[in-house]
Amino acid sequence: MTQVTTPVKIRIVRKPIKHIYLRLRSADELEVSAPKRCPQHYIDQLLAERREWIEQRRAQLRDTARSPSVSLFNTERALIDGQWYRCQRCQAASQAGVNVASSVVSVYVRGAGSLGEQQVERQLRRHLDQNIARLLAHWEPIMGVRASSFGIRKMHTRWGSCNTRTKKIWLSFQLVHFPTELLEYVVVHELTHLFERYHNARFYALMDSFLPNWRSLKQRLNHYEIPDYPSGH
View 1 (cartoon, one colour):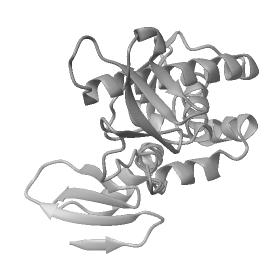
View 2: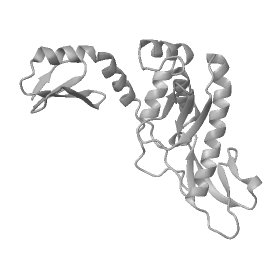
View 3: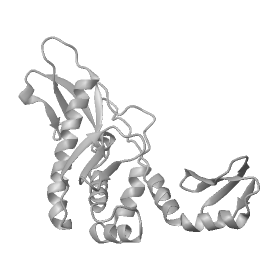
View 4: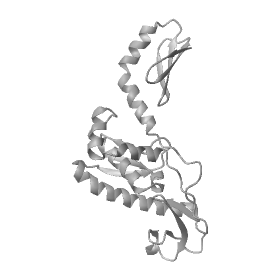
């Protein structure tokens, strides 16, 4: 096993194989599996040829969503837009929704059934859907681009994704918990992919022009500190 000093830490592992394989174990560590008799200059040549791919994958890993170790919603409380809300039943579907003024999530429960997490999640999805639609309506004319549609799903490895062929963007359900400006960063990030598919110099230049403080927002999102639930609630 050999250590090579480069901007990304490289671990070269010699194995009884025929080809060279690259695997990024993190944004800062690349593992190279190589045949036992493979000359070092062959490895160096491959690393040079795959440099753009390596940087793209590093950027993707740095954008990886970090799932909190605690649940951020249940039938009693929910973290929404960076603030805690109380969950309560309501008597009519028309009354259901997120009330920002009173920090209450009203959830309609049909009949005499008990309030469940799926019903709370439904209201959180509805709230996130509205926030995303509002941000798209704001940013699309500014950026001069338009997504064909958007969707929300639970993601374990990223905050969002963009299908550059269909122009549909996907956002992580988990974003409902964070302040709106962090959701805004992800929306702009995914819309920028409609101009540039890869995380390269052009992509970052576009991000700088659209949202100059995107780096600090990205840092906050990836290292967000969950606020304590207010005492007395």
